Amino acid sequence: MKKIFMLVTAAFTIFLSACSFDTFEPIPSKSTFISTVNIKDMTISFYDLDKDMMLPDWKVDRPYVGGMIFPNKDTLLLYGNTLESVDLYSLSKGKKIESWETGKGIVNGMLVHNGSEIAFADQERDSIRFYSLEGKEIKEIKTERDPLTILEAEDEQKLYVMSFNHKMLSIIDLENKEKLPGFEIHAAAAGGLLNQQKGELWIGGHGKGTTVEERIHVYDLKSGKLKKEIAAAAMPVNFIKNKLSIYVLSHGSNMLYQLGENGEIKASIKVGANPFEIELFDNKLFIAGYDSNDLYIVNPDNLKIEKTVSVGKGPFQIVTRER
Image (tube, rainbow, N blue to C red; front, side, top):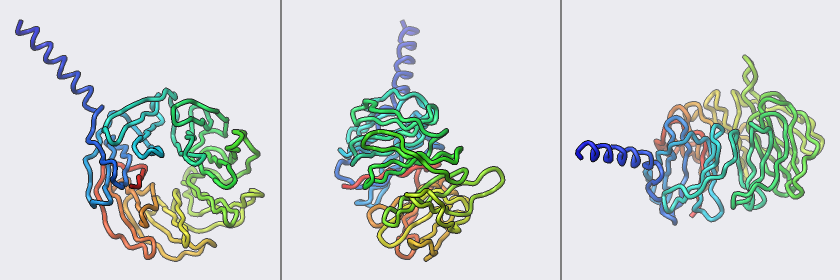
């Protein structure tokens, strides 16, 4: 009898351990937060901006690389390129509520069509896959090999898709879900910004082989022709824009650049260690240091670091929620 009891206890302990990742500390529904998807220790970190404090990390059991929050402000969708599904969590309940069987290959995703649909970049199938918020796949459109960066031109109802391993940029008509003629760009492109007021597409990159990318390439959206190149050493991989400036994050040199719309450098600062991600939120710049495991809060006007917040190991993507 004692042996049976011990076996039952052991089995129950294993069951509890297996389920321990399914529930987390709920996130207050009225809080404004900025979160990071951390890939080294498989955690999600939450920083409450209203209370100026860290909330408990979520220790997940799957290697997520990115995510997004639905318009209901409660559903957090997480994805990873090695996973067979994308997973949905309720922030207020602190638990997983659903999974969509997508197959492996999802490396990027964003809400499009005013937040009514999701566009996933799938590197296993070399395509952009459109889903409803209820998890129904609407349409799949083939792109060039290994799609990575996706940008939405809301006014034009177009999606621009860049591949790290191919020089041809793909363009998708979002209204009709059709592939349009693209144009040739530089090799090893990564990260971009649509400057629609000037009809421009700014694209960065890592470089290829032993050659490190040290320039931003600016293309004309109508003709696809290269208009100019802007120095931003080294490896400019992420961009964000406000009404006055364009901010460029170069992770190879740990540099943050503040540029004018014509590409002139207004200011620059070294920030973080191997930073990949930048976000403009609540009138502040947030930068995730992948190797320093920190979130840097920067004043966008003067590029002064106002605060540094410790997060999980390997913050790779930033996800935000307004109150």
